[in-house]
Structure formats: structure tokens, C-alpha cells
Image 1 (tube, helix red, strand yellow):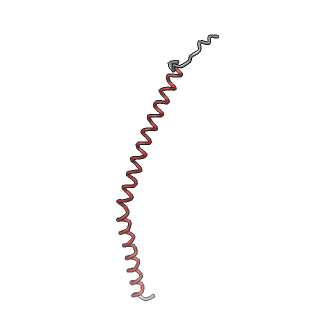
Image 2 (cartoon, rainbow, N blue to C red; image 1 turned 135 degrees about the vertical axis):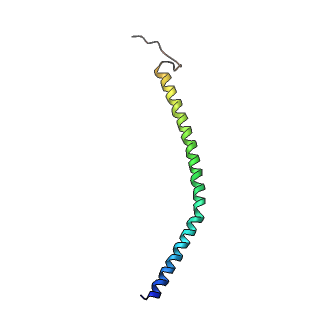
Image 3 (cartoon, helix red, strand yellow; image 1 turned 30 degrees about the horizontal axis):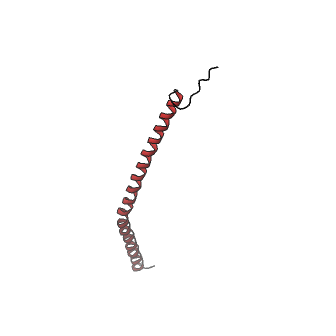
Length: 77
């Protein structure tokens, strides 16, 4: 391969890389928006999950301590 052919090949590779970088730069803001939306959604889901777990633990604690209410039987052995 001659020097001119190598130079032409490298120039072509640089152009391909430049197009890839340009495409990446165009797509990056869109991807960031998508990821930000997903992050917000996950944060809301996590907040709901934490509230549910807290309520479940509260109910369990009340049940264990005998304050659960409902039909309690006075079985004494």
C-alpha cells in the first residue's frame, strides 16, 4: 500500500469517526432526557415502596404488641 493510499484510508477513518462523534452528540441530550425521566419514575416508585414497607412494619408492630384491634379472644390457659 502506497503512502497516498494509507493517507486516504486514514482520512476516511477520521471522517467515519467524526460522523460517529457527531451522531453521539446529537443523541446524547435525548438519552439524558430519557434517563432523567426513568430516574424520576424510579424515585416515585421507591417512595411508594418505602411508605408501604413503613405501614406494614407499623401494622406488624401493633399486632405483635397486642394493639392490632379486631377480634381478640381472651384464651387463657
